[in-house]
Length: 224
Image (cartoon, rainbow, N blue to C red; front, top):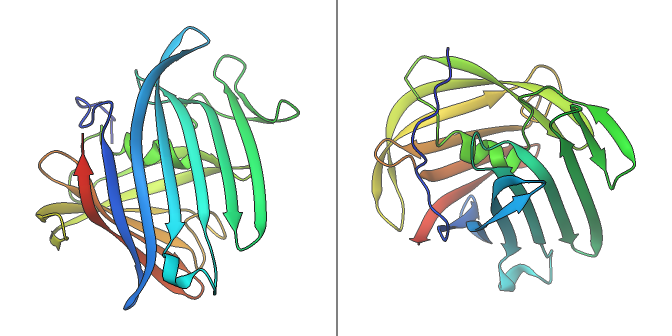
């Protein structure tokens, strides 16, 4: 499949809120936000942020307060800086990744360097990238993703159209299923499914599968 970028389906200031559910249990919320535009190393970039927070009623059992930020080029949505701040029930991690698009490596906190391809993305900008490419039922295309110190070649299968009901609205959506071989980020017992609205290419539902089951993120609100 030849990738042709579409007109962007989002603007600066867009904020998408999801409710996170595990079966009947409300786990909390996730927000995706295009916060601003900046210039990084003379490259015009979007500043995109993801925030995942657990429901207040569950914090005696577990707490989650995770923030991920990425500076990604406005032309092509290629990441230059990726930052994550993880705070989960007392476990904390801060990690900064710098993507050198000229020398083709990603460095961790300016130290450890790992080679990448010219098209390597991060997980957060990958979600937005899928809003900019044609999604035709039955097509398959590949995307290179770097995550947690490893490079992955992701096979994205464009599945069937489905009706998705959310608290915000009902949508005709198309399902995209990314997969990797073996124990990759979307392989073995892990996995992800993403539903994008046919009209406007909005990510209206995301299902993340894990060993214990799956968490469903369903669109709750959109503001601009």
